[in-house]
Image (cartoon, rainbow, N blue to C red; front, top):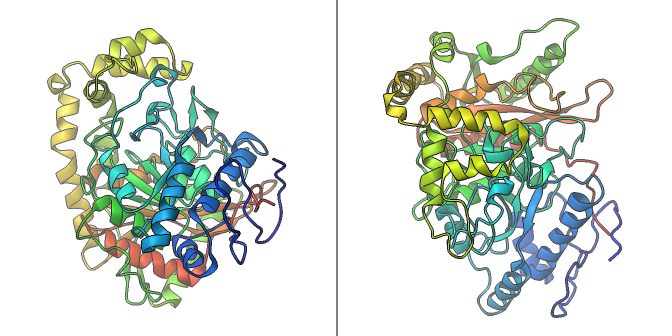
Amino acid sequence: MNIKPATGAVALAFVASGPAVAAPATPFPLVEATIAGMHRAMRDDGLTCRRVVQGYLARIQAYDLQGPALRAVITVNPQALDEADRQDALFRKDGLQGTLHCVTLLVKDNVDTAGMPTTGGARAFATNRPPADAAVVARLKAAGAIVLAKANLDEFAFTYRGSSSMAGQTLNPYDTGITPGGSSSGTASGVAASMAMAGIGTDTGGSGRVPAAVQGLIGIRPSLRLLNQDGILPLAHTEDTAAPICRTVEDCALLLQAMRGAGSDYRAGLRVDGLRGARIGVVRQLFPATSPAASPARFNATLEEALTRMRAAGAVVEDVQLPDLGAILAEFKTVKPYEFKGDLERYLARWPSDADGHLRSYRQLLDSGRFEERNKAPLAEYDALGTEPMRNQDYVHNVTARFPRVQACLTRALEGYDVLLYPTRANLNLDQDGKVSNNPQTSRLSSWSGYPALSMPVAMVTPEGRAPQPVGIELLAREFDEATLLRIAYGWQQTAQPRRAPALTPELR
């Protein structure tokens, strides 16, 4: 098949053989496609699920394996077209099969998907074939979603870099010379490049929000334990959660609704005027220091412009102080070095190794050496710290004192406000490996409190000598108040329309 980039809406390309299907009456563009738009085209224009799946597979071939070679994908689901045919048959009989009918997903490769490997990005886990879906994947499939592929990630979800021994370095489709963020790098890169309709990542210390911010996406870290974590290769159970990553707020609302299960309806509260009357507390302590010659000046100016537009749309936007912030950031830390070893061994023991021969112990992982060299040192450190962690005073302090202390700080700051606002990152995205401008301080507030947070794009900025890139801000709300985050984010999306598709991955002909 000869795939060529094109501009504008074009017919979908085919990448696999199968039953002939009638062409839709009008072409359906996949770049920036939405769930509602796809369902409307299925009802009104004869669009089939097979054509949708084939089109996204073509985009993976064109942009992940060729073209900019984003390395966002580790494994393509070999059953995706069969599932599309099944959904088409059901649609002809009964119409849409759930709120996520034919919604193609990129699922981070630390989330179990039956029939496919779950590697965590490490060659040591290349044979891992968990027999069942993770709980959130099962619910997404029940709502009609199709897992199109497993996405690349920072190996073991350790850092922001986005590199793995399974698939190499994920690239950012806005500018392949800058970091894609992480650790849900492949999910965000693939969704930003419209290789699927939406994605599932995980977020421990910013792993979903950071890549969303640098790739112009909506990334949600739900309240801790809002979602069932069963079947997710863990990093630290005290901080881990699954995280939807999407191009639009409404699509993320639908994903979160399905992942949460019965009784949730996050789409119902979305309003075009969602900013009107919203009370937003701005945490300027988390804005970068500025100087006339430094990029933070331009970064902060972009944020100020967004705050001005929010006020114009009816929001009350005021500065708020977190008096304990400095002490909290100095006193507490992530617990992943203490929990990773034990959590990983419990995960590997969940299914027999007779069929897939997967590793069963942390020692086997270390002895295998089948991971990136840069992870040798942290794996050894986590081996030592993960042995009897409850005997370690530092760990005990973080798992007993941190949540109530951070929650109290945020609860005081939220008095009189619906959400707190601060940059998802501390500066423009100018680094490749994530060491410079990824600011972990901003993502810690949600991770260390269990309160929900949402990263959303505010504008595109063009640094000198670079391609245009997104700038993101984060909203944080009270525990289990995801509906408020989504309402305000939707109001901003409808007001500003800040997202732009990356130029490197246009529509295919």
